[in-house]
Image 1 (cartoon, rainbow over the protein chains, first blue to last red):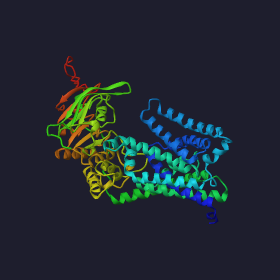
Image 2: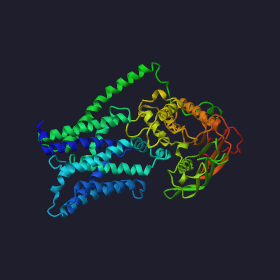
Image 3: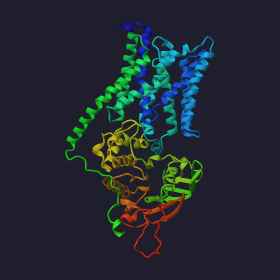
Image 4: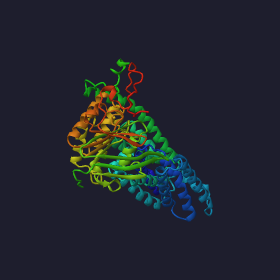
Length: 300
Length: 259
């Protein structure tokens, strides 16, 4: 493992592990409430933050965190008070965010689109020691929220209307999910890149679903897979000299295909086990509407 | 958190609500007393579901007052006293979840910061036994039939051991076997003193339990009194009692529920 002799690779691997944990950990709630592309939208908005960081000589990671958190709150507000069509408003936000990023980077002294590339597609060599500090702090926040509040976030993402009647602060929790997703985007930005970050939030969860029946197991498999592909993608990227983000995402999709192929025989085995457990099988349940059918036609 | 014996559990006075610009409730008065079982009937679009959803705060009201257990709804915090079954055809979300996981979310109102203790886990098992789903506890909700989904949603409402059950069409899309399980479950709750307000499209097997029926039409209360007593097909709201061989001048008896 000669790659561990290089400080930049140590940092890249630390970042990869943190990305592998956090992206599926928040992504599972986005998938659960059927908004899997929210991470994609936040990624676009984060570009404005990166651009502002260059322009104002501030840390692009912290700037992207601030701007994408703001953008995610705005998306959540659009969802509540959707006066204009929600999807149109979101489109404005996505493209506005992207255009803002390109504009600010080019306004920065000596800036050009080349500065953006490492943020868009991820890069191993550019993860600085100060980035690692920021990424670690942000990842800790994501883990505390997604694990500590898992029952509350599960309830809100499963059935918002019902969650309201259990007395949960539904709006506050929705905002928390949005901000946590934004934070995760900036955690993942340095290694995976803003364009591909959403894939690592969604695809491990989709792959895990193929094998599991419960939320808890889906969560565990998705995080394990996330760490696995992030680390192996980073190592592959070092030896083959290919971009880490693309390598990680392609590995994740390969895992999804493999899990899907495994799912059918697994489901058959489970069905056989269930049939053995209940030899008589379930009572036949037909959806017959009550009180209908007999009697009524006779009088006619 | 005490309320006098005479105090209604639910009290709506002159409640109005709009969806978009369209008025859906035009001044509803509705009271449900302790231990009562009240059915909210009416055609599609009459405002029954909206009325229920104003009570739980999902739809904002534009006028009138709503009280739960004598407390204005905005100030009401004792949500563990309320069990809610929303109108759903599925209990599933975008990620697989077991029956236990879904039902457990109904227990959050009884926990501190969502930390589950032994009593909470026992309550989940008990709720699943009540609806006859204990043997499916570890199965994914995706693998259930329509009737079983509804049983899971009702177990999720019962797991907090509520004093008031609010149900929006709990029998929609439910097969006969599950309807009977649900009717039995509900009977046990009513015998134990639970107050029930439920939206129904047809009285069906729940008919013997219902003390009072409130019929809505176009966002107004059309009828508030004993439920229409009839049997079989004739019990269906909206059933126009037409006898083709009856004298031609006889007006059909229209309940006015379906128009």
